Length: 431
Image (cartoon, rainbow, N blue to C red; front, side):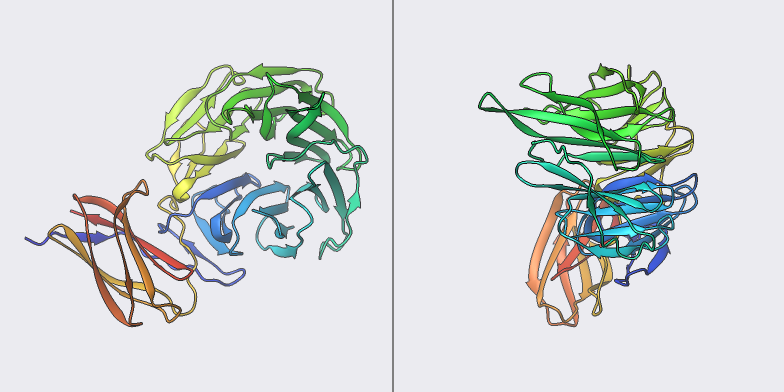
């Protein structure tokens, strides 16, 4: 008896620099790495393979752009000015209109770039021995060609890729991590620097080094009243265990309250009492007593969430396999976004396409058309957790081809075809 099959989604994304199409459900499981809530309605998300998603209706629909073939590590905004950092450097992207358009900057000298004013950018660069900060102000915002060294008292800390920053109305806060030499031995160290003049001058508000009780700062945020909140990891075990909250505003933090956490590193301050944190296994955490106690919110996925952001009553969390969830009630209830079944990889001219899928006794018959870029085709059948159900590789004749893959039981699967740099996928349900 022939089994029935439903093809859930098919999507294609163009490789044009600013081209984007409004998509509902979509395919291919790209990981999303960072999210920024620009204002009450605009949200920008970045991820693997130069993927950028932008919503102007508080996360109810999304426009997908493909800006680069490189992976994006973070996106940050101050009002309409934003910057995207690319993993392993070499380039970055800048916007001055809330993410409606982006300008590429090729620059391999800086590790981390973020806005500290509507026309001011800060850059951070590292060598083996010290961290340095640079400041850029460009009236025409065309190229930011001139960068000035702004911190003559750089700390002799070797950076390990966990630096972070926040900014608000001329206030800039930077955290750095690494190792320092104490009596001939290397120990973990971290610090927090604060600037109240858009990055021109800096003061030290927290510095720690030693063997025990030290944490490397992973993320920071500001409460609406201006208190600094930072989450960190134990540098010896690489596990999340610490959150610190300044008891005063950022310009005068006085001392710090330390909390022990085990809910993940990515967090967001909704207000001075409500905090949200992203976790693994499909969990988001919520605290209403300034991180004293955390309640779990279970979302309908087993994905790990990598980033979370909030503004007003809007909160957005993103993570592996392209999952996006939005809340419009301060993180109490969450809705799966229309984009929450994966973000498609870009196809190029000469697309690899799936023509048809038919389920027969214990296997799928797949017909596809290869492009002319290569004759090697990789076909995989994955479950919704990304585990390989079956796979096969073959050589194509550059026209209609067919292949058969076994499956173990009825249910939902992801069919993934790869040819050269192209990867396409399609979600299927076998009844």
